[in-house]
Amino acid sequence: MAEMAGTIGIAGQCMTGKCVRAAEEPAGSGAAAERPAVSRAVSERPTESGATAAKCRQGNKVTLSGRLQMLADMVTPGNRLVDVGCDHGYLSISLVGAGICPGAIAMDVREGPLAAARAHIAEAGLGDYIDVRLSDGLAGCGQGEADTLVCAGMGGRLMERILREGLEKACRMRELILQPQSELPQFRVFLREAGFAVIDENAVFEDGKYYFAMKAVYGLKTGKMEEGRETGGHSEAAAGEPVNGRNGSGGQDSDMTEEVTEWQRLYDLYGELLLRKRHPVLMQYLRQREGCVRMLEKSLAIAGTRKAEKRLSVLRCELEDIKAALAFYIHIQKHLPT
Image (cartoon, rainbow, N blue to C red):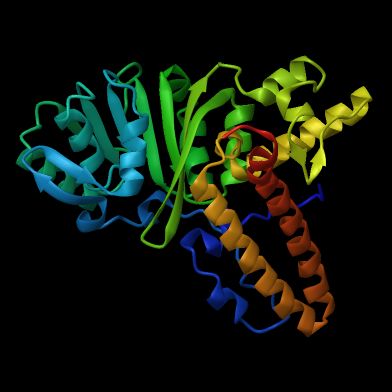
């Protein structure tokens, strides 16, 4: 698989499902495809409108948007919740109101969303069960006050900063449920290097945007990549599924190590469990991103400048990675029972 320096559409414009505008930018600029997803300060994190986040409210019952329901479905029943970046507080209201969580702490760094959250919580009659706190990251959550940390609606770099600064607290949580809006590959690397294992992943496409969520736990070795490391690469991942259209059945240990590294890089790009589950939303994203990149490729090829050629090389590497990811879907259709 061709090497690629941090290029993935999940962190770029195709996260919104819109590629045509990018392809129409002046040929040779390459700006549309490599526009970086810059981490913003917590205070600049965009809020979600009440109508979008919770489509209707009846007493303390909340019908969540698709992306928030995806997060709610990952929470283990009986766990106490802390929602970092709670916005209007709908996730806490839904989980506590439904009896899934016995209590929750809704935290945000901005007073505006917290005021809205307080009003919604009071309206739902859950003021005794949901505590609202002004907090930058996990600073306002005491050690052992919560079992499940939910952090969503912000860039991957910002989320990483929040977890790094509150790492001791995060490591003591029973589970982290995370939905970074950008820099997903780098964020997955951070989780792994910090000692977290992703045990579940999901994705939704809603209102023209892709949302990817993951559940992580600290100190648990899981997944085929770990098996591959412990057995010199001889795992299902390294021996049975396609790598860039090839069957991964190497012979030498060095080849196996290199192959496992390539597998890990692909998983960091797109999510190991999403690929293994052949998630339909990921497939939709990959197909859309592939079309977007090919449009940009044609535009840059016309330019013929040195800068355009350099950008073309990066785009072609991304196409190789997309091809390798899509091979998961082809593989199951050809070789595995449905």
